[in-house]
Image (cartoon, rainbow, N blue to C red; front, side, top):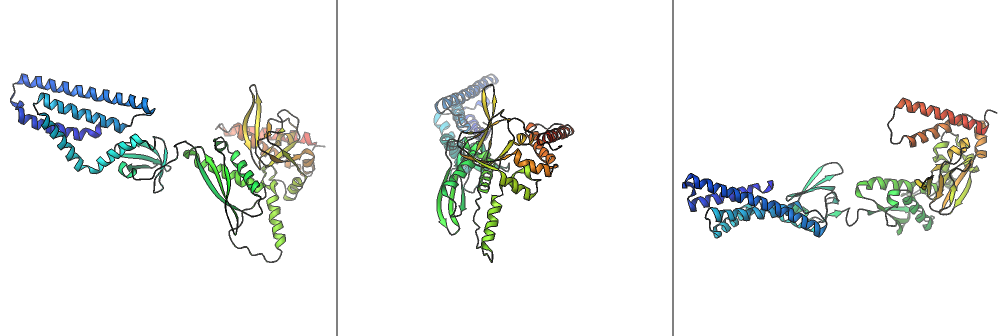
Amino acid sequence: MSSLSVPIALFVFLLAVLSGQNSGHLNLPLGEVGAKALNVLLWLSGTLLLARLGVVFARRNFANRSRRQAPKLLCDLLACVIWITGLSSLAVAEFGVSPSAALATSGMVIAVIGFAVRSLVADLFYGLMMAIDRPFEIGDWVQLNDGSVGTVREMTWRAVKLVTRENLLLSVPNSKLAMEEVRNFDQPEPFWRKSQQLTLGFDVRPGLVKELWLEAVAQVPESERIPREPEALITGLNEHGIEWELRFWLPDFDRAAEVSQLVHEALLRNLHFAGIRVPRRKEEVYIGQLQEERDSELNDSASWIDQVLLFAAVPQDQRMLIQAAATEHQFSQTQDIVRQGDDGSSLFIVQRGVCEVLIGGENGAEKVGVMGPGSVFGELSLLTGAPRSATVRAATASVVYEITKDDLAPLLTEYPELATEFATVLADRRLADAHRDELGNQAQMDAERDGLIASLVDSARRFFRLDQ
């Protein structure tokens, strides 16, 4: 009601002037003046109580009918009407003002205020329309015509206040906002669709592109859980190749950038491990050995082992020998690749598809992670012969490469110091998972890391019989 104090004060002032002229109450005896003051106080108290009860009734009735909170602007207007009615009745009953004079005073006050604050009145009525129509709610993410994006913080009778991603407060007058084309990212449902354009060569099979895209979305649980299917559509052809529109769904605008980043990273991994290169958008001039350059590019894209951190310290020629010795396996959807508790002496690298990581418990297997192309599992079994610590199941048709103990043994025999390199990478990964949400003492964590590396190196030496 603070926003209505000025017009109400002006209204009371005019009533007081009219009542003083009509009844001459200033010359009344002191007792009569006291009695009149008491009556005025009772009128004001009754009007205040009626205004409060009216607002409470309006809020409950609005909530029961629309299942939403009543707009603050609507409650303020109702209270204002009750106050003007109560003060007009007070003037008629206690000060002898005729009903026509009270009505004329009300009309004059409204006319003066309306002329003086035309823009405010426009904001008031447009705000009331938006409060009833509800194009957005408090907390919704909206976008204006000029591209400004923010979450709705407050809706007043004067303006709508937005908070942008840069944590800036943006106040938009209701009259201006009513003329805008407002995009609401949270209605009718909180999730929304985003598109990504991509051009790929004519030699890329369309079915493969769709599979890689669906697998990329499946690798991001926040997008995969939304009950809408991603799409991969051909939108045209040009001199560079096939134009694709890749559509996927985002959970809400607040996390849109983060989830979109994860989906794009997954797609890039899938394209890399599938050996697909995005065509260059320029003229390429080859002089001399054209076929040799193309073969070199193909070999570079096929060197998937270079993306595996575990083998980063291995010399390039040795890495290629390991890749050549790796065995390719194809798994259908829902087929187990490894099972928790089984013996193992090999690791696996996902080349295509999506795999789920399951850990068994008292209530059955629980899904704890998702892996896509480039992901590695089974390192501990390969290095130490430890049983499988989890079940890995193909969530889609998948292709994985297996590197066994026999494939790695010649390399460790020639370079025994690589056992320490492997143990360091493995220890860092295990400790990162164990202390992901902990700050901890750095000295204590370093000591734990050193002890784990020493233990893994000792187990690897025994497993591969390096001391012999």
